[in-house]
Length: 262
Image (tube, rainbow, N blue to C red; front, side):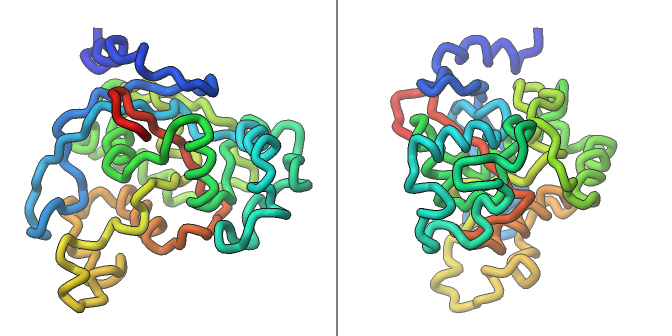
């Protein structure tokens, strides 16, 4: 049996959500990010990722509708603009009505970071960190880390080169080695620390604004420049504010599998 799945079975009992959502156990371990870790921009420093649980699919429109109905402060006609811009839930027919009856299984987009965070907290979870998302997204259908395979890279990149579909497909595409679906090929996703992706440990004291820009000096800090698809995600996330929404940006939640709180 696949080692990843063996570890997953061991952790499975710790991954049930009170809200009934399907969370997949992630074993964690040593992982090399495309982003530099520490104060040496060109250094490859593996990081230790603690075990966690990740939603098997992005949050759907049907799930988000249920959240809005039980948390009316997040209706589009009630939420303060400081927490969501004017495009928040713009695709819905009404403040508590989806665009179409068949939209319930599609990933919910046009949701701000603040709103995504509130949804995750409502089911005892949180948004994943960038490292957690990158770790999960490195897997293909059989390998926990397929990033060295040029064929896999081309397959992933081909999705990013296509325009976003006018009607998004339902969630639940083929799972990766961990049992997580739709990390690639459906929507982009919020992460908890999106606004710190290109801020080096000492950049705030260096006085160099270029270190905060993806298209400027910050981009040269990326270690693996062949991971273009991942870099495109970083570029998008680092360009956004927490109240911003887009039609191709959704989210999923993460939960701890130990005694730590979300």
